[in-house]
Length: 131
Image (cartoon, rainbow, N blue to C red; front, side, top):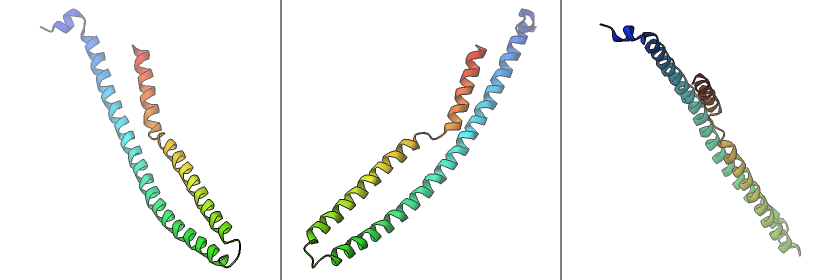
């Protein structure tokens, strides 16, 4: 004896089963999307790290050599102190610019997984509409 048929719940159970299957497929799709976005994000971060280390190292060497060249050029002049403080000020300004750039990049990094978040938000809106 099929109680679901007798009580007329067979259609309801079928709809629920279809919804659960659809939700499982949607969840799997969203996980695939998140995985793909994570791979892209990870690759970008690795490239950024390598390039940042390379640029930072070369920049430090170049700026140290430039600073030494400027100091050597003005060593036997009365402006030696002014030039030394000017070089220190330029280094300080460069440090401040690098710090501001770092803060800016860190703030933009919070926007990762935008597609996944948008899809999940759309799914949530669809679920609320169905209820």
